[in-house]
Each structure stands twice: as C-alpha cells, then as structure tokens.
Length: 407
Image (cartoon, rainbow, N blue to C red; front, side):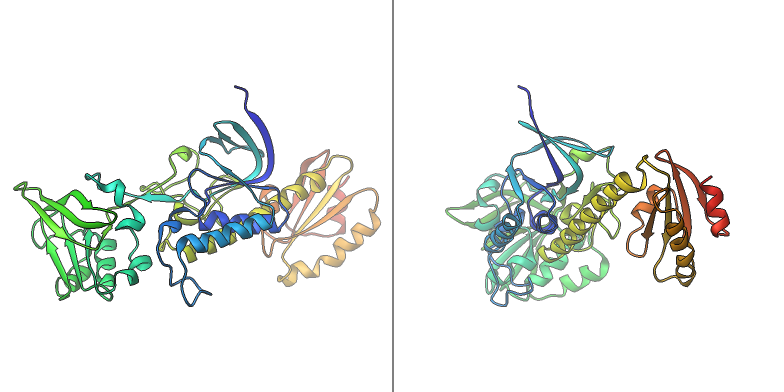
C-alpha cells in the first residue's frame, strides 16, 4: 500500500499536556500543525481523578476535564489531530519525516512530547486496576482522594519514600512493600530515617506484588515474600507504584541525545541535538514531572518552533538568496559597540540599494541565524555571494572593509 504524503509546518508527537500546549502555541502562530497521539488525547493526566495543584482551578479539576479543555483550545487554533502510532522518524535534514501506518508526514520542525509510562509490576490482575480503579502512580495527584484511607506503596527508592511520606498527610496508614531485607532501602539515608520514624508508615520487607484483587475497584494486594514464598494479603484502598518510569523514546535511539534512563536531553529552549527538533514534557530529563511543568515545556517548545521556522525562512529566502550579493550584520541590541556600528551599516545600505541585499540579525533573543552562518560573536558582518558565505568580518568593521568584502 502506497502511503499518503502530507506536508505540515510542525508535527507534534504526543498528545499529553506538553504536546497540547505546544500545539496551542504553534496553531496560534498560524503554523500548519499536526498532533499525533497513539491512544488518548490528554495522556496520563486523563487517568487522574483529581488535580488540585494546577493554577487557575481553585476547586480542582479531573484530569480528563482539564485535558479536554486543552484539546478544545488546540482545535480552536486549527491544530489537526491523528490518533495513530508513529512507526519511524527521519529527523536529519531540513525536512523531517514522521511515518505512521498509513501516512508519511513531512514537516519543517518536530516536537517530541511522547511522554512515558510508569513501570508495572507484572503481577496478576494488574491491568484491571490501573489508574482510576485503585493503582496510581502520582501521590501529588491522588493523595487527597485517599484522605483517611489505607494505601500501599510499592518501592523503596527516593521517589517511593518521599511520595509515601507525602501520602501520610492524607491517608490513615501508608504501608510500604520493600524488596530488600529489614532496614535496607534504595532511598537516601535522610529520607529513610524520616520514613522509619513516621508513625503512619509501616514496612513489609522482602516482598514483591504477587496479585491485585478486587471487584470493580482494588481492595487487596497480595504480597509475596521473596525468601519464604509466603503470600501476605494486604487490605488497601489504593496502591501506588514507584518502581521506575519508562520514557517513550525507543524510536529516537541513535538520533536524539538521551541520558542513561532514555530521557531526552534539551537546553532551556527545548532544543535537542538536532536542529529543528524539540522535546517537551515527561519525555525530557527534568526534575519534576507534573501537568504544570509539562505546560511550561510545551509553551517554550511551541514558541521555539515558531522562531526556528521564521529564522529558516529568513535564512533561505532572504539571506542566502542568490539573485544578488548579500550583507548580513550580526548585532546585539543591548551591546553599545553593536549600536555604534549601526550608522555605518545604514550608510552602506543606502549606498548599495538595489545592488546588495542588507539584512540585520539581532541575536539578543535568538542566535539561530548566526549559528547557521557560523558566527559566534557580535558585532560581525557576513558577505554572501551566489548564495554562499564569502567572507566573515569580525574585527575592524568599517566602510572600507565592507566594500572590500563585496568586491
């Protein structure tokens, strides 16, 4: 079957909070935008019963309700949606290729907002109680819903113990299943000491989850002692799993820079190691994974995409255009030395009008075009001939040097 080829300005991979926010920014910038989500628009947040820490919602919101608002706003700005899985990508080059089962999408930029998934135990009955039926992965999200209840935490790393202690502010009792021998945990010693002295926390050592039991909702977790094989039924209203998180980055292996855990590495502009490819949300290597931080990432990524595409168009359609020689002044608006040279550039522009195309590039907010020209300082003058860089003047910028560069 021959796949249909469609062209977009930007393709966003992933429809969680980060992807939807990036879509809102790109759509509002009037970029032709496609968002691809393989399962449910809104991502993991849609499975959260109650979100009380998202600004602007003092009464709280369900995850699904909040994500529906994000979705509606993205559609308002013309974002297209495809509910399908991305099979492969080709990210090098000016045009990025994103391939699904039926389509090939070509884009000027790509935002990776594919998020991740919590690591599961693999125990019997687990699939039937995920998210809103008793198994949770976010204490910050679901702690309030467990006020006065008994909860079980699986894991003993920093996240498990710290989230467990947070749960004690709401729950009646927090029981922790620990794989290791009595007193041994994977968390830091300070967290360990605080947890073991917390009167609302209990520990069941040398155990893993064997089975999740309940009817419409979880009510019992059966633990298994790894040394004796004894089965230990634990009555619990909810079970929180903190045994790791798996980012959805498999298809980017060998292309995008990642840390050891598979999380994508970006700078503060959400730029990856490949020009024109950005990452946002839980798929990034970041300190806090929440809806609020995903929104921040998505906003930055969307804004960065807009600037990247605008700079690309300026670079190709104006600066490197081969119909006449070009002169590019790289400057920084806050630098006095750069401002002092402006009259020189303006005089050259007036004298060379119709013969040389003069472009001013202010790097105060973005050095994208300067980077493409191989320039890392300002002020600087670049002469373009026949659509190619001919000369770069970094020192002694004056009318004579500029005239010599254009000869």
